[in-house]
Length: 429
Image (cartoon, rainbow, N blue to C red; front, side, top):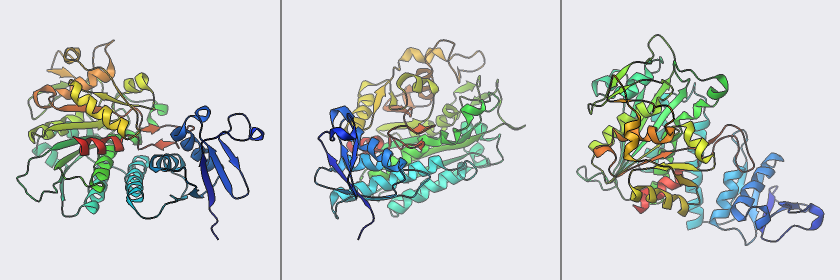
């Protein structure tokens, strides 16, 4: 006899004695989720109920009844996940396409959430690159090849952003260059390039963060995790396109070797950038990945990064931000997010934002002038390293990917909110 709590889904209100607009009611061995408009609608109500059941210490659940579908089952798991607890969830379905999809999402999401939540002592730049490579190669051994550029090789190959940001740490920076090529043809064109920010810990450098702002900076590699998880899910769904993945990994620490305010970085594409704030380091490492991606001449380039506090101020922690000079590119990501029941919102990016990052000693500075929009000027900085200053490129500022504290839908830490959007973008475009 199973010891799992049975959880049923209903679209009617709970009996009055459970309280007005009660989300949950209980019988001897069963909980019922009352998903009504008053409790947030089906997906929100299910995720909230999962958080409450986790909060009660229920560690073994089986979904039961006829009202569950693919998205409601997934919403329950997304809320039920707890990084501090190993819980068991029975999807309540047998083998088939729906089960295969749920298992693929779960595998990708667990990797994204666990690698992002991992201790920065364990998840350092090369470890992040190796973990992503191993995870992706395990999904498609015959289609995935990769190399990791680190140490003096970064200088030899001109990856000046990663080298400079990472040189304050005894564990230097690293770039993962991964090729997913299911065609088997080495000469096949690259369809899409993905670029991810992999700052495994961000002290802010000499522009040091206060302790409260630094406490969750192990999560600053969320972009690298998200593009890797998105590619993983797309592969599990049968992706047939050639995709190259670039993870730009470093620790931003303080030492006698760390980069400083006033330094000028000259990139391999000839662009020079003055450092006016060492806490705006993510764009410096992404620049290397975007240069490399542009050299592949793909149809599209997508980068993802936990890049700016300005994006969080604009859209909060429920939405990821989307920026592109091209309406069509932005719409591709917004449409992908909508199809996957993830939240994304477009922020402004115009050519005039390129003029708002001036420097007296270099072509651009790594932060904008006072009073300029931080998310937009950060994206404008990135555009200087994309072919034709932004052609076929879209940037995701991952405002909604991590929670410093739990809320009524998500556990503390990485949410994995965004990897499904990236998977859909890869498959549909």
